[in-house]
Image 1: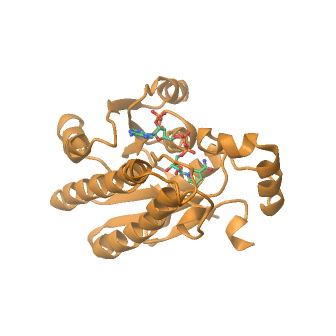
Image 2 (image 1 turned 90 degrees about the vertical axis):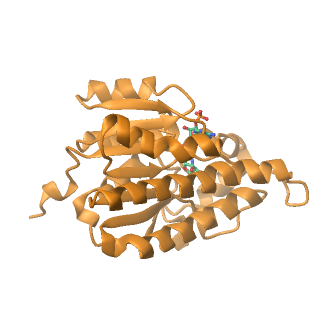
Length: 254
Ligand SMILES: NC(=O)c1ccc[n+]([C@@H]2O[C@H](COP(=O)([O-])OP(=O)(O)OC[C@H]3O[C@@H](n4cnc5c(N)ncnc54)[C@H](OP(=O)(O)O)[C@@H]3O)[C@@H](O)[C@H]2O)c1
């Protein structure tokens, strides 16, 4: 019989970026369902997520931060740690996408995407790692990668570069910290029903093409990414380091 306490997150305090909507909300709700206290970080109101978690009997607070603001991001983990106590986990979920042909993609679209999707992840992870190591505690980081951490995609140069970067950052930080009590892993979602994929899903031809290529025959739900996050945050994954777990309906296997 499996030991369900291996999936228990009670007494764990976990930062989730972009927890107000989409995949981040699914992750925050799933982690709270396993007992964790959530600190949602982002630029929009976390009220919907906080209400959902409160209705489950859980705890969710919020910290406002624009993750494209390097100075604000640099201070964030230290501020949270000092004002509300030590952290056990960090989920780097927030991300943006800009679509254009590689001949036309502007440098602004390059910088904007790299700032939020990669630089902020490095800054937050570095600050979290420093704090956990200084305090001689254990910690877990989950980065939200993508199937475009493995494939090129179409008309999304800055996004694909950022998500390949996330795969590399996950592996190097796992190597640096595995022996010191920090697990760094990533989840690579396939096509999940969120704002991020609305344009693709609303285009009848693209939608048909995508669905016919997904072995599961459907788009994924944010809660299904949340379930994978519970595993990677919980003691059940203590020996998992540097993994990039696809949750993609089989897309990458095809
Ligand atoms: N949906 C998919 O199929 C899919 C597939 C693979 C990977 N992913 C990845 O999953 C993650 C979540 O995406 P999603 O699909 O849930 O998209 P989403 O619904 O658009 O959510 C993106 C989240 O990131 C936040 N965010 C964006 N820019 C920010 C900034 N400058 N400062 C603070 N927060 C910011 C958003 O906040 P606002 O609401 O304020 O904009 C929102 O909470 C992203 O890293 C994405 O690349 C998604």
